[in-house]
Length: 600
View 1 (tube, rainbow, N blue to C red):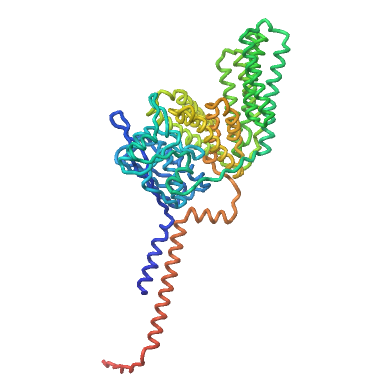
View 2: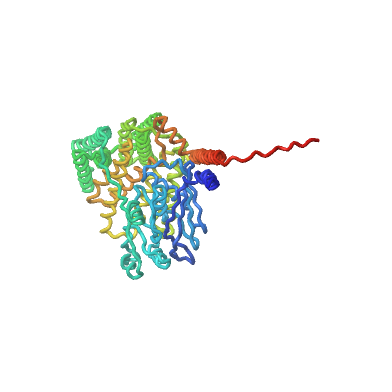
């Protein structure tokens, strides 16, 4: 018995350091390319999580056509945010094994995020289920290519159930409607549409994982500041409208087209004023900005300025742009709110410069540059409004810009495999973002990359989607944005741009659904901005101890294992000695043996 206990002590000493490793497995659906055609494939994804420093590793056998490192990192970050878990104390080791070379990239993102949550939470996943889909901001599952081929591969592999993005359960392909339910019945396999990480976890585990949505509690400082901004822009539009009506000159220049354009601008102004009274100030600011540009342009047209006057006006606008730019560069940026205010101001100043740089000095260009400048000035009110300091040093900004650009590039590369002719504007936006990066404008680079990724996701999500499905898609995006914004507010950060875009998307949702989708996607991307920056907060002694134990848990467990092993060994030895002593003490007395002394 004592030898068994000693062996147990040794085992404890060796095994305890490995208890902290978490492992998991999931099947994913992929595609391979051969002879110019795509074929479906079933691959195995494995994950091992160990104490570490937040690193993410990915191995693929054989190698994939598209690097999956970027989408793996993004999926891991989405999973950690989904759980509200600090994953900087773990290292993640992913392995994809496939019978043949596959096209990698973002199509494995949903499976990676699902597996990551399951491994971190100890959720058992069903091995007879496989899935495909991208993972997007808000933990939403997005569309991928070659759905039919992937489902057929799952049938051939003997799987019982397949999960695909909901919007691809029925889609248009070559002017023909593809109904996945019909394919599933024909091939005798169950196909389920999933919209989010909640859905995929429920389908794999058989348990409900729906998160309770919290209401958005709007920061009063945001309301006051944005109402002031919206009111300022609407007042400018009203001023231009009145000046046009009261203008003593230029009446002879009024044409039928001028009258029509003026009516359109007045309608836009009216929408802005209604939005202001309905407490949707960002929508008001957007509508009134458009009205101001149109009305200011008309006013300049009526004045019939000379070339010299137009050039002088352009010079003054340019001088003011430089003055505002120099001023905001001096502003301290400590919070996510500061960062977002800085990004949107810089973008507006850049737009204003771009209008002037065209060199024609037309009334329309001068009006646009002037109003863009006024909008930039108004947005300065948001500096210092936010809470929660983050690391906004040059290194973290540069990294966040590159991370987001990498995500956009991977999505672009993947979509171009299937739809190479629809990404011209996206390609130009990617080049612009890289130009900002090259100039060291990392905030602008990040902002442009966020917008471009959102537009890429919307574009890919609309391919083949029936018109009647757009309403459901928009509802899903808005609900996800609402949930993520509420979560950020609960964490102590009010995401001014995410909420502003969310509000505007809701306003547009009745009659401009495609634009509403884009702004809903902007809101989702902006609501995930915090995953690129670490919250800076005062730590208690308990926090420091917990962080040390988590980060150096291998060392802690080795020490703990040694102590437990030594304790068990000591107890066993003590009990053994005590038993020996007890046995000797109770032995029958023996005759003493006579010592024989040997003499030399």
